[in-house]
Amino acid sequence: MPAATCSSRLAASCSTTWPVEDYDLAKTLDCGQAFRWTQTGDSWTGVIRGRWVRLSCTGGRLRAETAVPQTGWQWLADYLQVQVQLAPILATFPNDEPMRAAVATCRGLRLLRQEPWECLASFLLSSTKQIVQIRETIVLLCARHGDPVTVPAGQPPAYSFPSADQISRLSEADLRRCKMGFRAPHLLAAACAVLEGRLDWERLRAKSHAEARACLMQLRGVGPKIADCVLLFACGFPEAFPVDVWVARALRELYFPRRRVSPQRLRDFAAPHFGLHAGYAQQYLFHYMRKARG
DNA sequence: TACCAGGAGAGCG
DNA sequence: CGCTCTCATGGT
Image 1 (cartoon, helix red, strand yellow):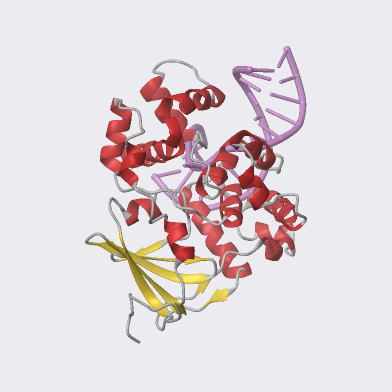
Image 2 (cartoon, rainbow, N blue to C red; image 1 turned 30 degrees about the horizontal axis):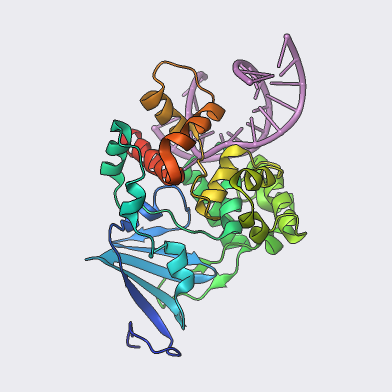
């Protein structure tokens, strides 16, 4: 079928493109904010909202292909945040040596707008795990408990991320078989909280950052770091500043040499120092440190 | 073998 | 408050 990129209102197509500036797809999809993307050549394959997607970006155009014809692409434009101008965000970063180095290394890295449940579940599974292990657990979880999604001929099978409803009907043993260990009961309890309406994403978005954070931290297994990951990567709180071991190491070495500083104090330092888009700055520091040391 | 990983939470002083 | 320990598991 022809790839109609300029479609009339009702025409369905399996591909589209957006003009983009400063959009580094590889850094964006492989910087540790999302765990389900796989690279083959210059393109990236993943599943968003139950739809198989392949992305590539060359010559200032971001191209997307799906397996099933789409009548609209807003769901994907939102996820990729293609309308966001990067330069004004980078301009809010402090003009100090650590940030200049991070921007020089990571230019083009974007924050995605992920699905809240998948983001919460993924980061619930992330604690004290390496990124490769997080990905492995999520692959198992999706393949065993998600739904198969339509893929183009010749492509390997792909699966949706299991919904809160699907996970709530599993046993702790089912989840432990996906190598999530002590995190299994946390994931099960979070799924129930969503089902019972104790955790409602619309209500969460309407709260202040501090209130939303406290709300998420009522869940077992969700502390300050994971709460801020969900608020930053899925809920649109640009001031959320997750402090993990890498970011803590970066801040201590770069801003507090030879001093003992707690994670709480690092967060208190971050808000005024990194400004309106502290969360963006955090992701640049995270990727910069991991690339430099990893 | 020892140590670490995009942590959190309980126990303790 | 800050420190220490446990939780699970594969990699280096």
